[in-house]
Image 1 (cartoon, rainbow, N blue to C red):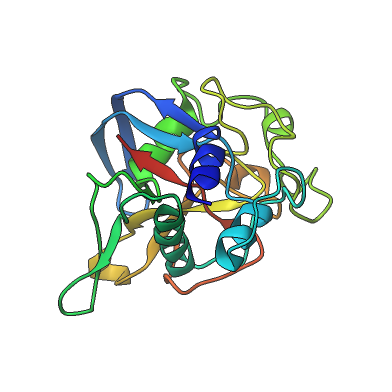
Image 2 (cartoon, rainbow, N blue to C red; image 1 turned 90 degrees about the vertical axis):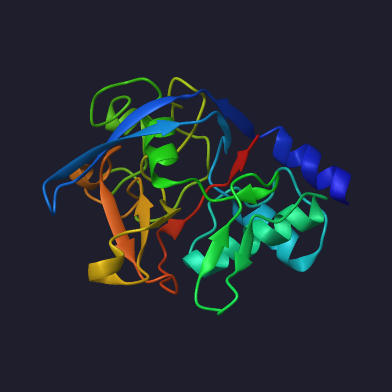
Length: 226
């Protein structure tokens, strides 16, 4: 099954070139630049078909439930990445610290992981400079056009690098802590969702919650170092 899984995932991964991105935190009026190394990012958010196949150790279906998986906590996403890596015959990215208090990411691992916040924003913008990479109705499912629910991945226009649903449909967990001194273990998610108003669906919009938080418009997308 490892060959089948790896082949399936490889077909979905997009090579993102190196570059630089400016991040900002409007809450504390702060901006900073981050250099991005080349990495791979999935063309789509993880869908229900793939998620269930990996957790249940069953065959992957290419055309069953293509809606993004939701009600996924940050902890769930990290566990899935490690399980997917193991089943694909790759090294795991995530490990528990010796004191059991923290999750450590091995960025040199060849396994699957969550994108960093900087990687996510850089990939979302795909060389554009605006709040969005296209007209919202053309690129995203959000409150005004979603019909009040999640929709199949890949039904809207992609960005210039061939990534679908980077805005709208589901929020996507990133690796990063939001502000450890103020919010403790809260992690960042990005991108807006099917339930979000237009202003919440933009490349620089940041949200956060506890790593155990789950809700019906929050999922994730996998990345990979190389």
